[in-house]
Image (tube, rainbow, N blue to C red; front, side, top):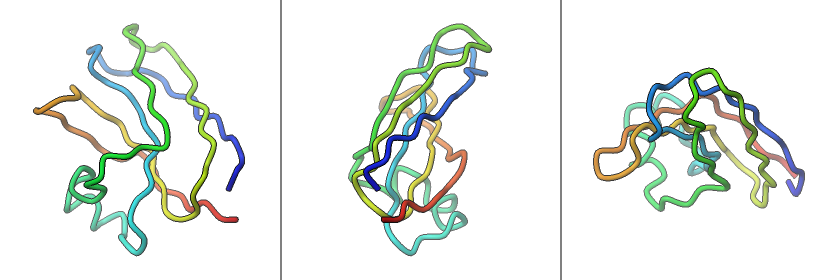
Length: 98
């Protein structure tokens, strides 16, 4: 907690409406439950730790620095076409400790 971690992503999408975020998940949810509920339903408050839009060039790498202010379950989330028709999937989950 309080540490800055830099995540490096590669844009493998062919759309400009893609990006990554690091979100805090409610305590006690397993990755299976989050998958079944869907990320938007599991987090439902829409607050992300940080967010950056994906570059438009396929294969381009970019960095997302995140400073963690809260302990608990977090996950890297990939968004496709943000907006009313948004879709998302988590890439990985991890726990932030003190």
